Length: 458
Image 1 (tube, one colour):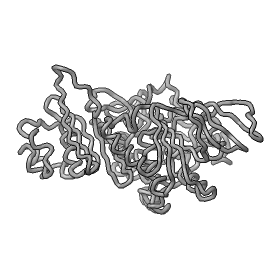
Image 2 (tube, one colour):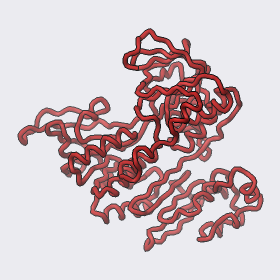
Image 3 (cartoon, helix red, strand yellow):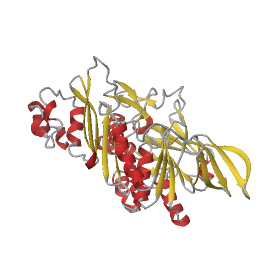
Image 4 (cartoon, rainbow, N blue to C red):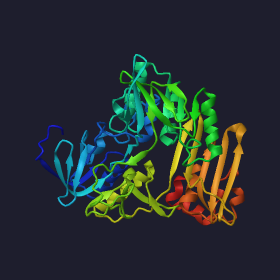
């Protein structure tokens, strides 16, 4: 693409920006309805495709590189899909129905899907250089220059993992610092601990995984990490990093503590990639706004996956929920509608899963809800510290709206079904913590639905 003439114009019936879960789900849905229409997929990455949940498993050496893909090359050829890797879209001409790539190429479309995913957030941090143990001038590290500092990485793509793995091997890294104790930070921690690398987690909140865990759930994981000789700095952040000969050599925390550091992972969050979107032509807030058909405010342009704001069925409002299963569902809906078959997205809710040092955990829905006097919210908990097990169920109006499971995650699918299908718990709340809690305890109408309907996967 880099050698393309800037006046070249290709034409495709269906153009998809993004080659991950949502984009490929959409391509499959399109081809199910339209066997002949040309489909073109653009991705700025060089890999054919890969499963994002496997990024840290590859880093830890649990999965080989060739096993990270979730669609093989035959998917593209058998579905007559043209895949252009290493191709970054820089703008969309809504009126002219075409996109412009970084190589200056124009691609005209009949229908466009934006499934560009997200980009890691890079905070601005004071950066101080040293020469012969003397401080030099200060500057700022930000999104424009962080990747030029040796030893500083993000970990949201397979290419990131490949770079980190290579850096560890070449520099004999024995410890690493992770800025951010959310899901990406904890998945990174999981990989480093598997490699025998001690970690320092720096988290601005008062606990790790603060968005979905309560203090008791967080403490189980925190204690396990610290028991392995690693450390967690909560209510803290990095105020300054030290650079020697183009490499990170250490940092200073907000509380004044200074530490040596040769590997820093920035994991403070991910934002929808809207860099090529004109918000005056395609409505967007934190993410692109879509309707139930996944259509944007612009004609013939759809969006799905981590780049959108979709309906949260528990909060009753639209927000960005960047998780793989929802991205797949949204892509299916978008692709169906692009090809002419009416489909509607019903919404979803947040969930995550991470395993640290052999302790599995799952959180779903609304897990940090304040319970006030007179509120319709009930919180039920069960804590077994000797087993590193904790379960928390949040109930509102007699229906489950959130759950945390640490240590023992059996029957997580059943609890997920209770949330998704808004099952009335009347007459069964007393059984919800039973070790043998299962389908037999569910309402008869719901059990019938599980046997004959789509809920059988729980």
